Length: 295
Image (cartoon, rainbow, N blue to C red):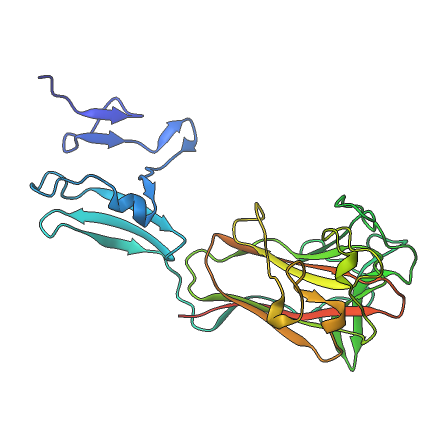
């Protein structure tokens, strides 16, 4: 049997090592050692030898979003169990990870039917996207027609908020960039929704979220836990919507409703709010968006 030391990126491995890896693998270019990354279920399926000490010291990195476990682990063959070397679950007790109350922006920040970037439109902090009427094709400002059709920062009694007026079709607010929630426990988000009192909704006019015709007014709240690859819509919040929408217009009022979603686990969080109203006397507002965590 041949025996030799093994060196990567070096012709002179240390005499004390069996395997020697140098970080520089090309001139001025460096790398690290990446352990196998597994979920808890996958780790438990590793075929360790329970009858001997052969697998003592086996190491993996556990990245398990379902249990909020992010740990470098080592196998103890004597006890037959996996132990944490270092965990990266972040300490957060009632902390705020993100907040948006629109107070930082100039009045009229947003979009109108004639201007896709009014005010000091904060493209880094939020995004407004409207859609061609009857389709899911993004078109900024899309179904908005004139200056009186808008989604923009407004104010009452020195309190700013994002107001949607006569969108004529779906118009969507998106938090950006994605909010890092890896390693935080008990992640939740909340936001306030309010409106004028003359909104309406008729189930007979619903085809899909982008084809709610006949004057249907609604709000959809959805979120992504994987960087925007997929989104989850909150249906019929507290009985104020239906299976297709978080809130239907006939259930909204000037008194804000605070929507909250808790126990979120994932790599990142993006919140989207899609709004439709159809008259210049109809206003829907969102405010006080907050993402928190706690142990």
